[in-house]
Image (cartoon, rainbow, N blue to C red; front, top):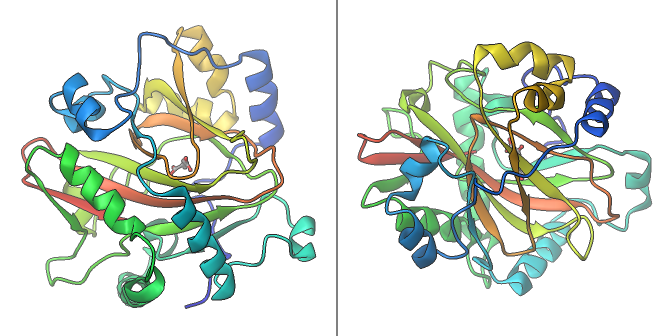
Length: 305
Ligand SMILES: O=C(O)CCC(=O)C(=O)O
């Protein structure tokens, strides 16, 4: 399988300069009353008896599990991705001329979902690749699924599948170079991407799980910001105009910054407006990412990428 260098946003990105100007004028305000659960599964369950329902209701901004994956295995896995030519060597000079680039290793519903047959075939290739890629290391996909199961109150955590049993990609590596950034946005197969021909659209809530494998700077400069604002149609024009920070300030909406070190895993509700400001360090930021479908009354939780 070749890496996929063709990632693009589902909706046009707002003007980057507009977002930065707006953020400088109205810097996000941390809300001390909106705290993540964690830093491990037992603590999260002690703080929130039903942590996924708390995420769904945006009662908490995130569940952060520190050191969920061994940092030494994260480093070894990145060396393996390079040695298998799935990602360029971070030291390769060609990358310096390609700022803001992102490479995916895996199958993205967002990018490939327009052709369901091709998407499911590509996903089968990802399952084949991942069946041996982690040999000798703790399996990071298992880490994500098992952590989610432990938080899920007896619900069954499964790779998303269509009624005929064909599975979606189980997780995706995202390698962010240069000053890559995610502007304030939300993700929803149902509301935003409107992929109603996919089984995952049955779920009421969508979450993301992000396992940090490498930060853009050794001391961990990059931070995701989860805003205390669930998407509504009212927010759409402000996201598109790059003026979400002013919108949040006008309504006194705070946020929760999530700083990660290699091995840290976090889950959040993707309907909460979220962003990753431009990377500052020289290393690519590398994560393993999943989306998660959850409904309070559904015994299954679907995971995909
Ligand atoms: O990489 C992250 O921490 C968040 C990425 C993101 O914005 C997303 O998955 O929608």
